[in-house]
Length: 610
Ligand code: F6R
Image (cartoon, rainbow, N blue to C red; front, side):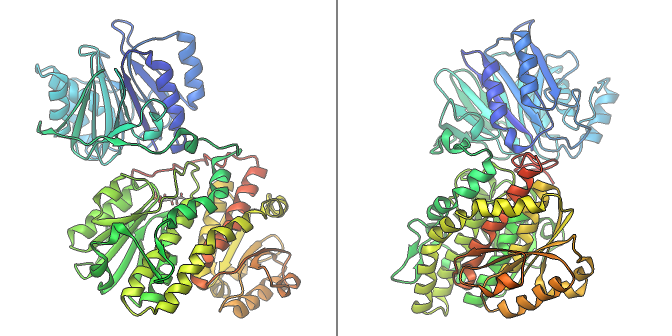
C-alpha cells in the first residue's frame, strides 16, 4: 500500500526521503516520487517502478533542500506510471501533495474544479486535493486554513502531506482513515505513514487521529482538527529497533519471520500464562472479562490469514467455553447489515491493525452496541486504538508480505483468551492446567520443527513446477489447510485450494491425477483414521502426497510420497505446529521459482483501502 515520508530540518532531506521510502517498500508499491522546496529550484522527481530507480535519477540531479516529501504509490485510480505517481501539484506547481487512501467524491470535486478552470494532468483521485486546496489559497487563505477548508469537502480516506513554495517553513499533514505519524527530532521533524520510515532518526512519535491536521516546522509541531480546534497530543517512545526491522542475516524477511517464531511465540505468551491456576492473565481484557464470558455469542471478524486464525479461534471457543462462535470476513460483515448487539462480543483480528475492511467492521459492531475487542500486532494501530479493549499479539514487526509469525501469535492469543473465558465458565482447573502447560511448551516444539527446514526445502524442489495444489485437513487443521494454500498461492503464484478433507469427495476429487500434489495435514488426532481414508482415495488416483504427520507415526510413510514429522500437542494447539512446515514449503517453492517472496506481485502488506 502507499507510503508517505516527509522531512523538515537543517539537513539535506533528499537522502533521508529516499532512505525512508526504501523502508516503506515492504508495504508494496508500483511507483515512487519526491518533491523538495528550494526557492526557484523547487522540484518534483518521480518514476514508475523501484525506489532504487528514483534514487539513481535523483542522484544525477544533485538536489539539495531542507524540506521535502516522498511517496510510494500503489495504484488504485489510474495505471502505475510517472504522471500518476505522487507528488501531485496545483496549476502553477507551487503546492506539492502526497496522498494515501481514496477520495470517494473525487469525480464531483473534479467536475466542480474543472468548471472553475482547473486542468488535470493525471488519472488519479488524489490530484483533486492540490487543486481544491489551491482554490482556497486563491481566496486569500493561508495554507493551513486552505487545507482545513478543502478537507471539509472531501469524502473518503486520506493520509496527506503538503509543502508549499510560498510557505516553505512547514509541512502540513492530515489523516482520515489512513495511518500517519509525526516523528520529533532535534531541530528537525518528520511525517510518515509508518514508524519504520523515520526510526533511523527518531524514536519520539505522535500518532495522528482521524480528522486531525499537523503543522510541522523545523523546531515545532502542533495539531488541530480540520475545524481548527487545537489538540494536545501525547508523544510516544518507540521501543522497536531498526535491527528488528532488518533481515537479520536471512535472505528474505519471510524466512527470518518464520525462523523467529519460537521467540515471537514466547513474547506472545510472556507473563500471560498462569500455570498453577490453569488460567491466563490478559491485562487488556481485565475490565471486560466478565462481559466477555457472559456473551451470548462471539463473532470473529478479520481478513486473509487473520481470518484463518479466527476459524481456529472458533473451534477453540466453542470446544472450551461453549459460547456459540461465528467467523466472518470483515468485508462481508461491514456491508451486510449484520445481526449483532449488546449481548455479543466481536473480536477483530489484524496484524497491521490498519486493514480498512476490519476497521470498518469494528466501527459497525461498536455502533450496534457489541463489545468490540481487538487482537492486533501493531501497537497504537487504528484497530487497537478504536477497540474497546483487546490483546496485543506482540509478535514483533512483520515485514514480509506473507503473514507467518503474526498468524501463530494470533493463535496463541486466541488460546489464552479461551483459557480466560473457559475458566470463568466450566473449564476445570485440571483442564486449564493441561492447556496452560501445553501452551508453554509450544515454542520449544516449533524450534524442533524449524530444524526440518532443509528436509522441507528438498521436498519443495520436487514441486516447484506444479501448476495446482490441494491442501486438506480436518477439525482444527481445516483452517491450517486454508492457510497453507493461501501461503503457497500468494508467494509462488501456484493455484492452491484448501478444503476440509471430507469435502474432497464432493467435488475436488475430480481434479486429482498424477499432476496434482495434495498436502494432507494428518497428525494423530481424533480425525486421524478418517484422514487416512482420504489419503487412500488420493493415492488410488495417482495424486502425489505430502503429509504433515506426528513424529511417531511410522504407518503413514507407506501411504504417502513425502512425510514431514512434527511433535504432537493437544488438538487445539496443533495448528501452531502444523502450519510451520506449510509456511516453509511455500517459501522454498517460491524461492526455487526465483520469485521475490517478500514482495509478491499485486499484494501489499497492509490493505488500507477497500
Ligand atoms: C496473507 C496476508 C493477508 C493478511 C490480510 C489481513 O499472508 O498477509 O491475507 O492476513 O490482509 O491483514 P491484517 O492481519 O493486517 O488485518
